[in-house]
Image (cartoon, helix red, strand yellow):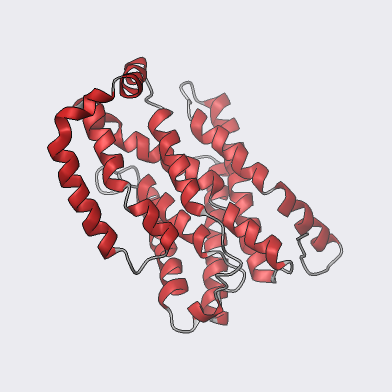
Length: 286
């Protein structure tokens, strides 16, 4: 581990601590996007599926547990805590984040680090020969029954979230029926890892949109978003360092996604610097 990655991890941890401090000290989540927090929880849950199968180091395992636990705790507070949930402004937090989830998942299916020519042929076969699904009519019928059960069980959720959930069995069907079992077994973790990288790159969008709609940004919320953006900027330095010091460094998906993620913060960084320079309250243009 190099100094840039360590600094990035500590900055990321700092952003989470600042957000937890805001929620537990003020008993308020005003200015915080629940949709962004749900996306981050999904990011960590899908990225760290290897938590109990691959041991790298105590530090790595602890950080994974911290990120998963803290993200779920934040979502729980904003949804379930009797006092905190009252301060959540759902009228401003209206970004359709399920589009981000769907787009990132499809991108991960098509482009990930284990992508091979063999998979291209399977995608082409799926597009050109829809008859491949005909032998699976019984499975489709069974999945429809499961789908109806999931739909009934999710009636308490919002319409947007429910509309994504009811399609999940058919996404699973596409993976299992089109890809050979060997590809599923070997590449499934890579697909979910790529999905988490793509989703993390755009997960901040609901938060940035909410801040622009509200205009004024309180101090702790501004610091939370700043540390979150700085963490990814430090990781870019980490990747540059590893590129010149490691012989087989090939995290090109993470690098490109990291650049996109950092670029999304550019506007916020500018106004944050202006407010710090003028010693004034952070305000974003509506």
